[in-house]
Length: 431
Image 1 (cartoon, rainbow, N blue to C red):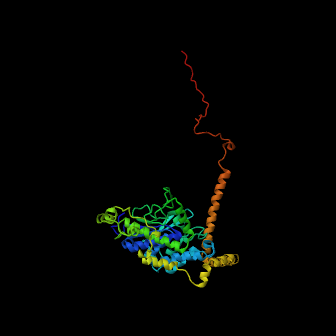
Image 2 (image 1 turned 45 degrees about the horizontal axis):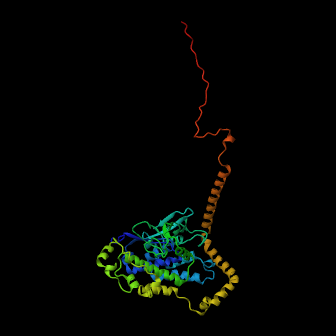
Image 3 (image 1 turned 90 degrees about the vertical axis):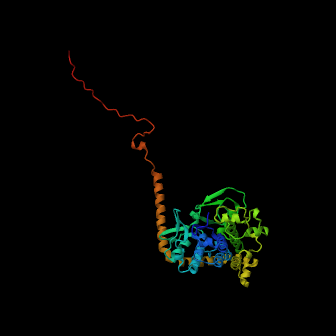
């Protein structure tokens, strides 16, 4: 892949749920180490949380803004006694509210033709890439649809331009991943350009959702973490790993000025003869003609002081992970406080359930007519299909014995019907 002509490449971010903060770390590395790579990108594609990161790039949001909002949602889940099963957990409402409060008034103008959001149409599962946005509200609705995971976020899919759409990662998690000019980013180990290096020796891969995933326990755990987040400090390490993996991508393509990863691993730059940064190979790598595969893979645990790599990213992560130090908050996080919370759960949970369900009902009232009409059409369509199949199975093909017509096989020769023929004899001539 060459990076000589500006506007000749795209960036594609995969759907990742709570691990979408991995994209924030990778984006910060590109912004800090290779700003030309971001500025020269023709279009940013994404699905689910990848689309949220893409729109933050298009709208010029800072790394502090992204870390605060993503880790803020993780902290909210941590504070709930039942986690994602608590009635107060409403990811779709949280995302929509944050987008309405933070996106600039001209966000749809900035995003049109520069942002591509992957959507999955319900119920046929067809994929669509939306690149044109008429209004700011339309852009927000597209992002909400792309982040809507069915039955996890709700029962009724959101509507966009008269159609119902769900999470774009379910049909195309990495838009245009097969295109050679697309730089792909994913927190799952696999064959993506920017991704963690797998520690598993398993060579089997699973091709699903337009992406290739290595079959390993590590990926299974990451898939679980996408929906059920760990502690904020653990999720923040995913952001740091995204920064390191993006840095490895840049050094392999010769897009950095110095071998930072070599310095982290060996405490000093390698000699030119050992596959390090010599002038000749650097000139070739600038055009993307060759790759330096000897660049080491560095994990977060190998970096004792991450602040030296990116002070801005580390400060944003520490700020986002900062907890409330009030006496009541510290008591709730303590062991006795958690025990008391679970002991009172049978008394408090019914009231919390009624309260939050009533709030959702009030917020749902403006959309009730459209949603009921959609559900009526869906039930009518399902009933028609069930009726058609049941009728076909009950009646079946009509038996030939019932009609009195003998059944003939195309493999047997047909007997031509016989007809009576009268031979006319003419008068005999006598000699």
